[in-house]
Image 1 (cartoon, rainbow, N blue to C red):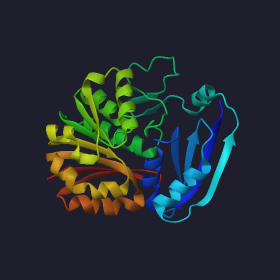
Image 2: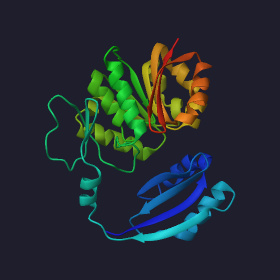
Image 3: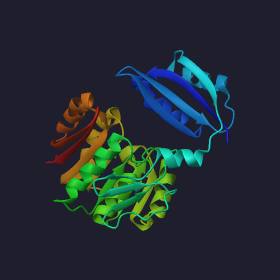
Length: 286
């Protein structure tokens, strides 16, 4: 099967906006940091030949300026099943055992299994931010019990599924991308936890499920630093006193601004987990 890749360079603050815009127009979107804190490359993957001129016009219209290094490349035909098997072998994060549907061997008996495939929604478990969130959640399970959790920006649903594995409780999940919500529910079905996960497409905390179920005693949000800052007040308003927030999607150099925004709302840092240049924060509401 043939694929075509469209790529171009944008500024850091433009990346998430453009990635979200194009996510529904192609088979997958990848964002690679080229120059720390400044330049990112957006890569769009298509299974049919793309209209390159129209895509470039869209990007430049949205940004209000020309994009740099706009390229279209026809990729060589590949055995994608074999590529997935090689590039996504099973792996463990603490007690969590993450594996794709191509893996036929049963999970280890003492593990917390999560089956998830790399797909159009973010979150196959390999990124340091997902690893940080799952690690933080497992550590919390040693001393805390939660009954009403929320996965904000659920992506593939991997955190929501992980929460059900740890506490066997219903989980609310929200994402502004309908494809992410679809994938979350499909992954919940494949993992046998669909009755426990309710997912909704909405812009953050305005979701109906949030209004219905808040206050939450646990909120996990693996998104990006800027939206974390922008939604700090909404998080506080949705979190019960003494509740826990697990936040990721931020670089270590962005910790201070994310922490400051949440400390203004009365939350306090309990732990910082750093994996490479990525950070996961655990905060508690007063």
